[in-house]
Image 1 (cartoon, rainbow, N blue to C red):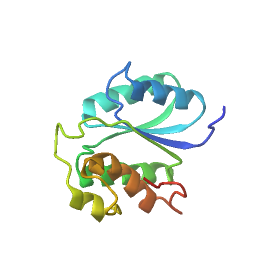
Image 2: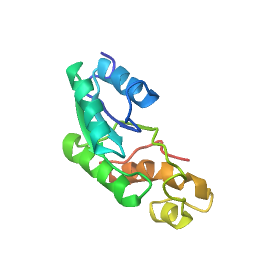
Image 3: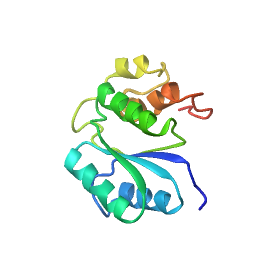
Image 4: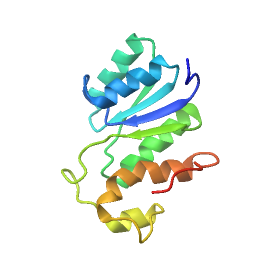
Length: 142
């Protein structure tokens, strides 16, 4: 198993058959510990249960990643469970469907003038994981 003991956080894991679920299953097959997230608790818990039935080590974290609070919850719960994040796969949808992006939010979590406002939503988990994880990530430039 090539990813034995690695911690992988995957967002957008709400439906079986979608890319997020397929990636979660593949990472689990390679021995990774998973933290999966979706906006709806019922859906992410169902996906976690399906993955556990296949032998995966997985926690489910419902979080609305169109908000900074949701991203904070996701990162903090992952770190509380595993102590670190080795891989982040950010597939959450809803970029502008649920909340318009706000440049000030990107600036608050470490973005700079080079950031485009449309990057606000996908940047939340990436920036927060970078700043919250012990030692931070070495390669997290955007």
